[in-house]
Amino acid sequence: MEIPEQYKYAVIPQVMLEGAAEAIKFYAAAFGATEIFRHEGDDGRIGHAEIKVHGSTLMLGDAHAPFSPPEADGPSVGLHVYVPDVDGLTAQAVAAGAELLAPPTDMPYPARRSMLRDPFGHIWVLLTRTA
Image (cartoon, rainbow, N blue to C red):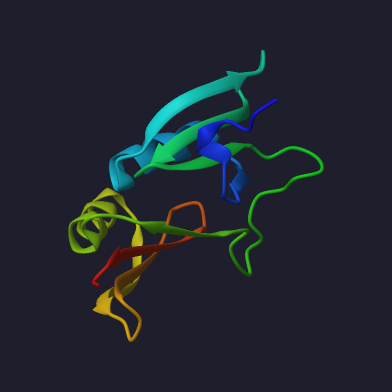
């Protein structure tokens, strides 16, 4: 069976956290994410969902054994996403509630980069190619 196109040539991050439904709303407001699908249990918790963030797939769900939410001493995952306008998307994310860790900056490699922490403790690195 062929691998679905959205999963080819990529490592797909999966984020397990408390409040997956709220995370999906935040990612839509902050990064323009679109929800592809979700599977909810009878208790309303999300067992598995997928969203698209500028063409990239992110899997997420409410934490359950053997997964757990991010620990207080650091994020559970870092997410790197290339976007058309790092400055605009950084401003959008901050307006939605993300914490700015590093403003958009031209890097020594051909990219402009910013870093953010979302309300769920995950680090987002947004990049726009400059060459």
